[in-house]
Length: 257
Image (cartoon, rainbow, N blue to C red; front, side, top):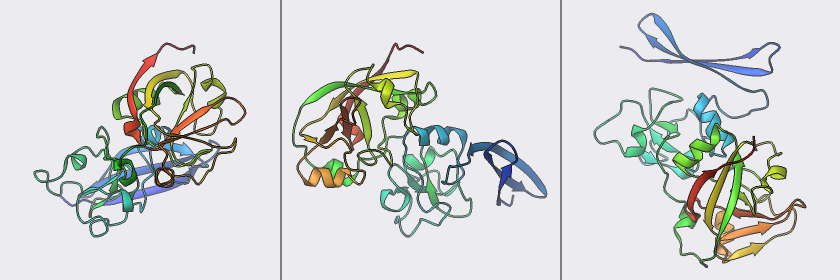
């Protein structure tokens, strides 16, 4: 059976959506695998519906989309530097016996003929290099994060993931109380209806100005001797971490619709 990937990207008139269809060619027959709609202003690669939800949950987008990652990643497996945080280099049907666990949990491949960057669902990625370093403090707090009913279960299942933009850069953001999350879920990437209560290890906290620093990263923060950031963008304190393992526990709590 010959495998080939055909990708069509077109504008759907009058809907404001971009439609992406991925098809698998088997002989002379074309079998559509999926049709998915994305917001017109979305600039990333075509994604499956569940990957869109993960993107909204601030999962890191695939880097070097549909490119061969075998050499840059030194083979199969997690490959943060080339593919992006939480992403891996895998190939469909390459070697199911020796493939690492993360390559056995792939639901969508951008290309089928080579190793490429993919998102392993249901597998917790290893921490970034700076997250592996010793922490500077042990202070913990119970904090709150509000999201949608679609994204909330994904977070509880797969864990929080640092995003790729925000007041303090790509990070994980929490509020001091459930009520405080209401004004903080009006941003572009925010959603409402599903409340998460989390015990977070904040460690040594760095106080930042009301505008924080959009170019802040975990690596820079840790180099300065801090584990987390707090700032107040006028509507109440926010607490920011860059390592998902600082979330010690998380659960859903009742919240108004």
